[in-house]
Amino acid sequence: MKTIKLIRRRHRGMTCIFIYCEYDQVFNRLVRDFHGIKWSNSTSSWYVIEHEGCVRNIIGYFKNNFRIDATNLHQSGEVSGKNMHDNHTVSGSFMGPVRMTVDAVKSKLVIKFMGRYDKKWISELRQYCRPYYDAIRKEWHLPASKVIIDSLTDYFHNEGVQVIFKKAVKPKIVKEARENIINEIRKRHLSAEIDNSINDLRQFLQEQRYSRHTIDSYISHLELFFKYLHHKQPVDINNDNISEFMDAVVIKQGYSASFQNQLLSAIKAYYYYHGRGKTNLEEIKRPRKSKPLPHVLSKEEVTRILQCTRNIKHRLLLYIIYSCGLRRSEVINIRLSDLNRDRKALHIRSGKGNIDRVVPVSDKVWSRLDEYLVAYNPAVYLFEGQNGGKYSVGSVYHVFCQSLKRAGIDKDLGVHSLRHSYATHLHEGGLDIRYIQELLGHKSSKTTEIYTHVSRRNLLTIKNPLDDLDVQ
Image (cartoon, rainbow, N blue to C red):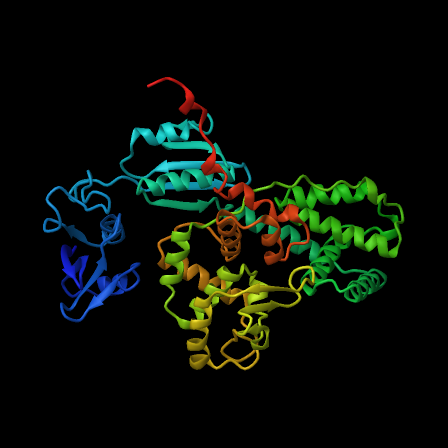
């Protein structure tokens, strides 16, 4: 195992950490993806501008592949931006990381300390509930509350500890069993009468201007529903048959409440259009929906994501999603004609629910837009694929995931987290919730009010009652 040497030097008026290593292909591949890395032609070496925790990040990033020699860095160990000292020695064992695994089925959060840990971490866990400790697996079990997960993640990040966040993956055998059952049902044939009635509903939904995605989902759900009850005609199906289907296909196969809710919407749409038959639609109850809080990135995390995105096109894509609070489907539908430079605004056409809106565009976006237009010269859409036409939602997701990885943010997030972060940061900045509702294109203010639960604007003004007690 080769050795990486860390040396602190002044460079261009700033204190920097230089990273030296003998020629090594693994090092050359890894170092280019390290957050904040720069190349110095004058010294022919890589370096980062020193900031709080940067040495810890360097060591954590390279330690699995290289020995770290920091003897020339500081006699007592790693440098911190606050006091230029740290009580972790370079040759010793480092704190963390902490692995968090969420089991969505059991609503359980599993926390495991992967290395050295501080006893005060356990005290922090006990602030939220009474955690269960599995002595065999050496894991702590807590409820999988969004508030608990976000709060503990922030806590460990503030402690300078890496958090490895994962979702419990269903065993392959369970997935295969579910797919086999569903595929077996879908192989059945629908009668021409049912097939025609579904097509009639499709035409009606198109006339009512439902989105293509919603129509396709409804039709797919109805085909599955009627194929399961293939021995019955639609007019003979009653509420008990619907309950039987929900139990056998949705509940036992582990589909989500959202899937069940949309399936019920499809069934109700069918019977409202064709007649209720033996069903009593008012008695069909929808599943209780969980109300998880949106996952919000800090401003520092958003900065890291944007800065580590090197490709001009990809960086502008993420700039616009965050600075305008857009959905994936909205950003890929932006046409060049939707940008109004004089008003510094962007016209979002036919957003969710066919709602148009106009949102302000940051000056930083306009400056990057000119550079992008010269380099890519799009024809119709602002973001186009290699062969023309609009960019795909899958490509947007891939770009975000790659930037998340380069930024060193080990969280299970989607592109929508940038929209959540935009709204939360606006609220924390003092903007009224009614304006945020308008910017996001929400029909109801109740949808927007969820951001008041993750915003820290009002929480920071709350005085803790313990501060009023005369205790030491």
